[in-house]
Image (cartoon, rainbow, N blue to C red):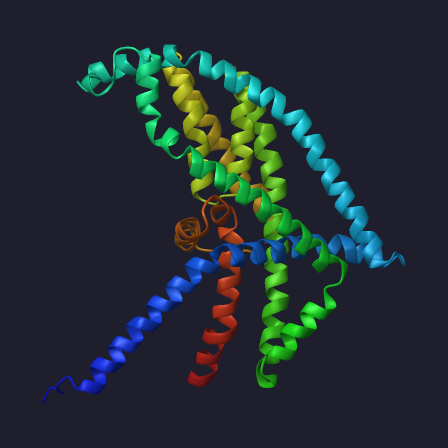
Length: 342
C-alpha cells in the first residue's frame, strides 16, 4: 500500500485547524464569565419557573408573581444567613483557638513515621505567616475576585428576574434563530432538559437539607463540638456529586483524630458512610425518580472540567451541565446515528 506524502495543502489545513482551535479556546477563556452568568441564570429560571407557572394558574399576573417569589427568596436567604452564620463563625473561632493543640498532636503522629522535620516545632506567628504566605500574597487578587463575584451575582439576579417575568421573547428568539427542520429536535431536547434540571434541583435541595440535619444530629451524638459547622459544610458539599460527600467527611474526621480520640474519628467516618448510603440509595432515587441518570465517571469529568474553567461555581453546577450535555448528545447525535443504522 502506497503512503500518501504530506502536501502543502495538508500543512496549510493543519495550521488553520490549529489556529481555529486556539482562537476558540481563547474566546471561551475570555467569555467564560459571561457564559457562566447566562448559564446560572437560565438554571435558576428553569428551577423557579414551576412556582411562577403554578401561581399564574390562579390569574395572578406573571410580573407580580415573580416579584412575590423574589421577595420570598430574599427573605429566606436573609433568615438563613442570620441563623446559620453566627453559630458557624463561633465554632470556626473555637476551632482556630484549638489549632495549636491539634498541631502538636499532628506533630506527634508525624514523629511516629519520621516526618516531623517537615513541620516547625511551634505554630508561632512567624511560622503561621510562612504557612499562609501563598494566601497572603494573593490577597489583592482574592479581593478583586470577591468584588467580581458580587457583580456577577447581581447580574445573575437581574437576568433571572427578567427570564421569570417574561420568558416568551427569549424562547421565541431562540426558536427563530434555529433552522426550521431542526426545531422539533430542539423542542424535544428543551423539554427533556427542563425535566432533568427540575429533577436535579428537587434532589439537591432535599438532599442538602437532609444531609445537614442528619449530620448535625449524628455528630452531636458522637460528641464533636463543631457538629453544626461540619453539618453546614456537609450540606453545602452535597451539591457536588460523588466528590462532595467524600470531601465533607475529611474535616470532622481529622479534627476528631487530632482531638486525641482516634476512635471518635472512626465513628465520624462510619456515620458519614451510613448517611450517604441511605441518602444515595433511598432518598434521592425516590425524589428524582431516576430522571437524572449520570454515570459517576461522567460526573467526575464534568466536575473537573467545569471547576477548571469556571472555578468553584462551576463545580456546583457540574451535574446539571453534564445532564444537559447528555440530552443534547442523545438528541442530536445518538438518535440520528441509530436511525441511520436502522
